[in-house]
Image (cartoon, rainbow, N blue to C red; front, side, top):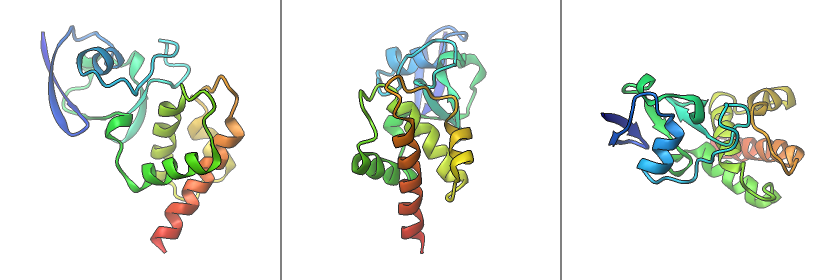
Length: 156
């Protein structure tokens, strides 16, 4: 069955069943491999993408439920938030193995778009569904804070 999806601002025609998880369409049909498979049950956050700007777990989202909503993957994330996050991640050497980082960055970008002055509770809440097996949680939180500072410095 042909299904149309708006991925990173481009309409994509995919031949897949409507119950196919979005993650597999992104990775296998569209061949964007930045979104990672972690657990397959929406518990680890490695597969996080944005659906109309909100972070979702693509491993548990059937493509038939998406309709004409806008999907953004790590490859399509282009905003002042994502630029600040990438700069902060580099500056603080946030990533260790890096596997979870696309999901971490997608969650952080959504948080900073909604709240440019997050406190620790805000950050912990927004990032709570993202597991880092290397346990770089403090560096991730520090990276979000630094990214917020970078965004606020530009907006002044």
